[in-house]
Image 1 (cartoon, rainbow, N blue to C red):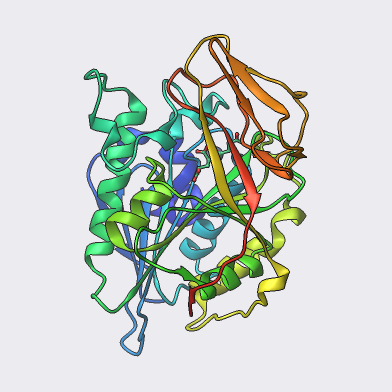
Image 2 (cartoon, rainbow, N blue to C red):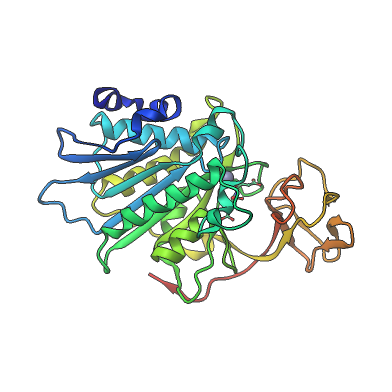
Length: 346
Ligand SMILES: O=C(O)CCC(=O)N[C@@H](CCC(=O)O)C(=O)O
Ligand SMILES: [Zn+2]
């Protein structure tokens, strides 16, 4: 088993023979990296070299939506490179391959959208206990254990990598979860820019997404990062992900990676409306191929459902993640408006 894993079969075995991961697996690579596998699709790397002075703890997750394949292929590549000794991590890194069964059916999810089930939402409601709920709980536990090893003054990071259903006027963008009393980090905006992600959405409310969980529960620098558009496995043009690949490789392998950014390079938006679908007849009032970040003039009807219409409240209000096909009670669209960031931490 260890040999298969070291030959780069971790993700494929996790998907095809998950029962082989019922008991935890641990071993050490020749370059003194400890490998710990606690479940299918959950693998942690720790550099053991004595002169290592790392103070960073990094989580990279992908496939929380099973059909968002480019980030899965990227994470699979990093895991293979580390296991085969081609890439050496300088910091502790936890890779999480989210929804393995949904990958097999090339769907966003099997029963329920996993990215609405974090911060304990997996255990609320009508007692239903589907595979997404079980997995969301397991992923939270993996993160809890991983960050438990970080000292109070050490830095925690979680980049939850996605691709969007629609094309997008701003191809790469990140959702910055609501920070409550914490301040936005200029260093993180610079890192995201180094990944080619120069559009940032500031969320202004708690959510049950994976990135909000790490941000809120662990004070991590955490983001949902949208790197492009959903495509089937093997059909991604990986050149479009090269900048993100290089920046994240530098983050995990270099002792220090501190890119800089000027704020005028960035497009910052704040979420103006979170539109929830309340009725089966919820309809979007623009074409199916309207890209994310298309903006509208004040008063334009964007969506409607029995008893309610949703309009652009100001000129230049843009749509993000519109999806009429979500379950009742779930987010069917965000609207965003341009904003500026005044107070930033380094
Ligand atoms: O393209 C879409 O409609 C969805 C893409 C996606 O999965 N986005 C995340 C964003 C999570 C967040 O708001 O932080 C999601 O909807 O779960
Ligand atoms: Zn997604």
